[in-house]
Image (cartoon, rainbow, N blue to C red; front, side, top):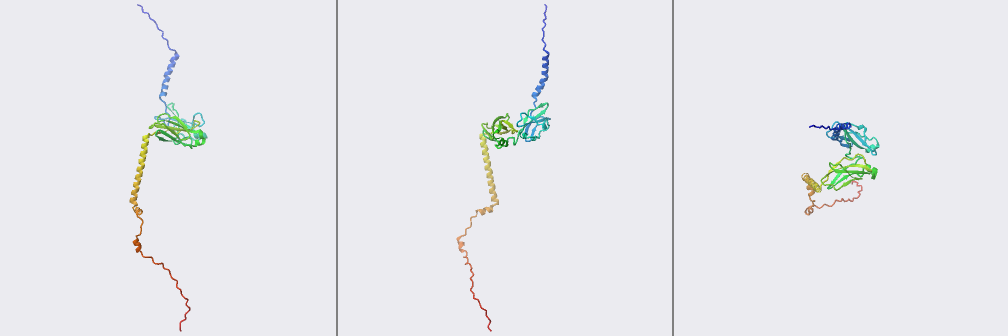
Length: 298
């Protein structure tokens, strides 16, 4: 029996395919490393004055400050604070436009650059809003000044842009207003956060306010708070009254007796026994004759 052998021809891949596969093997670890290792941005970036904190669990980083003027289209590096090791920067007013610039900070380290984090204003200024929050069951009031210097300067063209969101979620644009804004139909018991920025024809002006969060009270909780407040006021008033009474009883007893003593009325019997006042004495002028000179008798 004769066995026949058949040869099978195996086609080799082209050279460029092998080279491409080799490059993918080299580059893929770098891509996976950059995807897994992402440098977080600086935290607590405040604009008044400009300062920030390093990202958690990261040391030996450098930072770059960028600024954007009112009419500028792009962010530009602030040259005195490019790749600085400090966590603050002295941003001086170099020109009129610099009075209302927006600021942000980037972190550099480990051959990576973080996303920028924009600076916010904690207390408000002539270029940023001053924000206070007030809550009612189901609603949140964002208290804003209607006489802000920029609103007085630009009139109806300058407004407040309010961002709203639950704590831990991204803030979304809620609406514009030239003064305080009431946000209704919020979930009672939830915690909501707000950030506000001045806008001129929807163009942001100056740093936004730092995020502020507030709990929305429930209807029953509000009533309990009012009851507790009323009880405290009554208790404090009662304590003050008791202390005042003790003070007068201990230290002002004589004065209290004088206040309580009835006015004195003289009895009629004593009035009758009183001697009658004598008639007033009126001296009588004597009539005298002029006496002539008397000579003694011899």
